[in-house]
Length: 414
Image 1 (cartoon, rainbow, N blue to C red):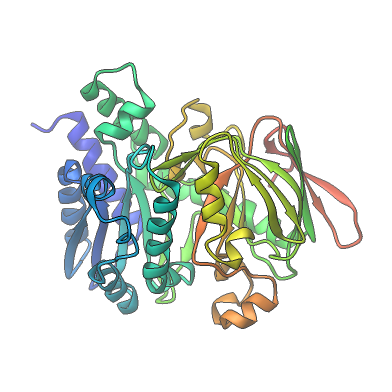
Image 2 (cartoon, rainbow, N blue to C red; image 1 turned 90 degrees about the vertical axis):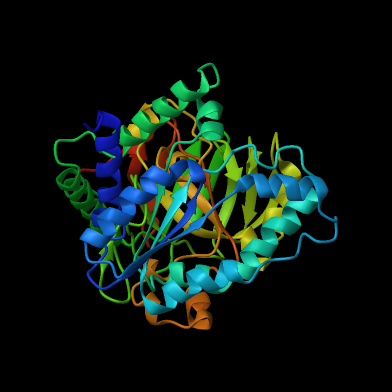
């Protein structure tokens, strides 16, 4: 007889397939980022996908230990090497308009203590070589989704005082709760959650604020919004006409900023896990859209390398609002995983903007998108800035201010 955990794992897999990528009959599904610890989850995903009509389900397994070995023993001049097959597999699925499900469960301390110069080369090489595939994601060429999965090193980072097996089980339980797997009907619960988020996005899109003004301890920031910007959340449409939910869980409502209009100082409120390096206590100052100063209590050298990736890496591509009372925030946990931490806090993203956050943006060339304020970059890195002390005002074209958030919570009803 199946245990409760096995039943919940099966429901979680079904949620990823039916609500996440919303797999359609005849599509293929690629699962990326799963470690060998996630074999049972991957098998449930495959079963759910084939029941939904998948023609083929395949897996790109991840093995972080190989990265540790590489940093320990590989030639120091070899970190710009990249195996092309890692691009070609996902790119084939994206170009066909198939579905891609990514599993996020990286070791937060994977590259702790490594030479920041090598870490920068390593990360920039990944961004550069995977750019043709990542561009499909920002243009919604395919239906895609990111979920998380418990594993030993991540669970122990969150629950360090627990024995490993208990920590893994505790993190699985937390994931199931945050993703509404424990609801009587998880799919129905998600459909209701999605409706609520979309209603809020519609309200903000209709407002067409010219800017947002952020005020909080360590933060005094004004972000310009281009005319024609579009707020999104939870449910998106791929170019092949399939609705999908890109993140499970998700609590955010987000849009694009004007790449040339960010002014002031912002201080992060949560740790950023940047590819296995933790960056803590970020303080970034913007002038005319560009980060002109960037400091951090921990990981500053890696932060500076990240911002120097290309010209657009020092500018903002995404503006996201999340109430401080979101279920993930209320858990009180620091996940050291962007999928979860960004859904516990208002956040910004350095780098690439999403074209679908502009009305008609998917039809624009890169040059046309840049002309309306859309940022272009190899990177897209979210960092968290929200708290229970955050106030945000929407600034209209005539300079009037309206409350959008007060003390971290929505200041309007929909």
